[in-house]
Image 1 (cartoon, rainbow, N blue to C red):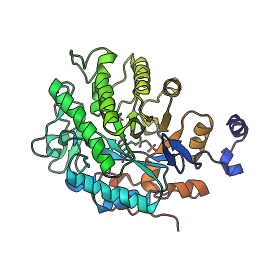
Image 2 (cartoon, rainbow, N blue to C red; image 1 turned 90 degrees about the horizontal axis):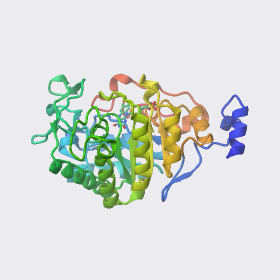
Image 3 (tube, protein in one colour; image 1 turned 45 degrees about the vertical axis):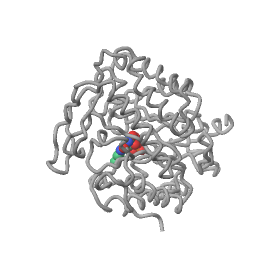
Length: 379
Ligand SMILES: Cc1cc2nc3c(=O)[nH]c(=O)nc-3n(C[C@H](O)[C@H](O)[C@H](O)COP(=O)(O)O)c2cc1C
């Protein structure tokens, strides 16, 4: 490895381009799973799940990308209460499990990608018009997120004011995560990723600006971390520690989550607690390529040191930077979103150096196949 690193840093071009030795495209393991390469398809909400149920179109989209090492699905709600956005899938009904089975079967038939379902409870990033009847917008505290959200019925609407969850509702939500994880495994997934990033329910509990509680789920970091750690423990108990990863966005500001002084210390604490909890991987988000603040290198290095299992880095990667960060041992896997969205055969393109399709931002979240399953693969 050091030899690889030394060679890499002495050359101006990525090492693998000159030698055909690539870390990115070499096999590795994730717990007991063998991954065919180290390229992960990042979770991407695509809003094609009509009625919140996965379908054949989604199966085709994921199957087109079966050459990834690991596919992490779009954010999938563990609860009717967590379906904040229009047309996102769930993992709480029999129809959803059957729909996800179409997806995992199609991916298995098409290639060797392993698959984790991302469990995303939107919490306060929601509007009642997007929720099924009887569902409620919940959060740690009655603090609405500044910002708007799209609804099919009435277009853009301000994010709703959440109801502060009672302890009984917190317990119920944790059990929903555990059951959604069991359902994911029943649908053929290799595991689940808890969405602890980007301003959704888990992060809403962890951050002091969205969590104003004065009970044992609010206040000092040990209390604000209780929801995520109890959720991780419940999901691990339900499906096993090798099957549970988590996504985090230290220094992320998306969805009205401002930075604050103790951020680095808080996330260092969380990294050590998640290490002790036994989760299989931590997946860090860095959205600086999308205009967000940069995640300090010191924060990434802390995660690398404190967390002893698989670390995934994501955000703005191309093949050269992916090889370079893998060679420098900054992480074990590299996750890519927009380039995977636009290039179903991203692995083949990056291996051969072929040109990439550009993503069409206008069709990221629109229903139907356009901008979804019609990106061309190489001949
Ligand atoms: C269309 C779209 C949908 C996304 N949906 C999710 C999501 O459901 N869950 C999540 O954790 N991140 C989501 N993200 C963020 C990506 O996973 C990724 O972190 C981000 O796009 C930066 O990676 P990139 O530079 O490779 O695109 C989404 C990004 C895009 C472009």
